[in-house]
Amino acid sequence: MQEFLSYLLQFGSLNQQQIDLISKKATSLKLSKDDYFWEAGKMVRQIGFLTEGVIRICYYNNKAEEITRYFIDENHLILAGDDIDEHYIPSVYLQAITDCHLVVFSKKDWKEINDTIIGWENIVQKITAKTHREKIERRSELISQDATERYLDFINKYPALLNRVPLAYIASYLGITQSSLSRIRKNIR
Amino acid sequence: MQEFLSYLLQFGSLNQQQIDLISKKATSLKLSKDDYFWEAGKMVRQIGFLTEGVIRICYYNNKAEEITRYFIDENHLILAGDDIDEHYIPSVYLQAITDCHLVVFSKKDWKEINDTIIGWENIVQKITAKTHREKIERRSELISQDATERYLDFINKYPALLNRVPLAYIASYLGITQSSLSRIRKNIR
DNA sequence: GAAATCATTTGCCATATGGCAAAAAGCGTT
DNA sequence: AACGCTTTTTGCCATATGGCAAATGATTTC
View 1 (cartoon, rainbow over the protein chains, first blue to last red):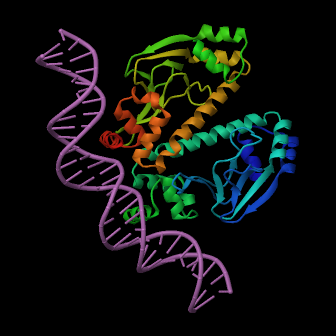
View 2 (view 1 turned 90 degrees about the vertical axis):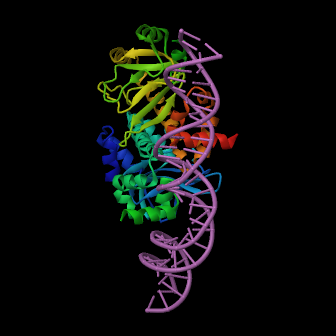
View 3 (view 1 turned 180 degrees about the vertical axis):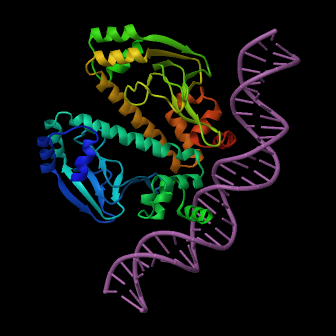
């Protein structure tokens, strides 16, 4: 919980009363490896802040291939859409890659926090904007690099993920096949 | 000018006085094909709303290759960074692909509008968030498609750009060479 | 610690894309 | 119509990546 509060305080200030409200509404959730936090097509029930573990965002394309689009690791907030969207239904899966710990809020409580704390919306907007920028930054270079450059970039930027994420997911994230990635790793050695 | 006001009103409401202020501060700018609106490394002087023409966002990678990252067409706002960042210096070039008309604001006037109109920040935030989502959406699928799929996708989503953007820029945007794209077009016919 | 399961590497060959330079096509100017 | 300029296509061959199946290596389970 403390991690989540520190995270929030990076984006705006909160008084003790507000912190108490947030703490009171928070519950904790453990996911086992391969569990889903959200599923495509099913209404989101909880907002979560990941305190331990790695989650991936994935989906199936029109050839029924499973594509991993992003990884989420510790100390990141998982938000429904961009605003507090009551009826948000994701089109992607959020799946635990490792066992995970999260601080979670029901949508109802999240809404209550939003309605009670002045400035909360602003904090959430800042978090959303930062998350967007990171996504854009992460993915925008990929297309103009060859697979080796993409992989080298990946291990530079996300060394912590390297040993916790199966090769197949990294390959999919980088837009190549697992065997190609395996060969690339051999060449780099 | 009217286009810009309609655009703004999609994101929030403005009274007549506010509209007058915005109109008073707006000036118009014409760019000829190949002119730059922003240059990497040079402080941004103006915020612009594109009313006619196409602009591309491009940069040079570490192999001195010119990469086109996005296209901007009519009725889109070109913002400095995400907030009104006084000292924003872009790392990319914004170059007119065709002759362009813009409604522009000096940074000083833009700031004055921001300080005067209550709710302006909120409007800008919404525009920023929408722009972000579009960028993410545009680029995130690219990596897991082959070049033909990427091109077909492009002509589906941006048919209006097809005949106004030189092939070389589209190829760069799609992460392939111009000759590969030319061959792909031959195969599609 | 053997068996079962899952993750990674490898071999073999097919296909996609790149690199470079020349040819062809398109376009505005005279 | 002829010229110069830019854009697009093509030829030839090299390299990168994919597809599939088998082999190896790592991890979990009993």
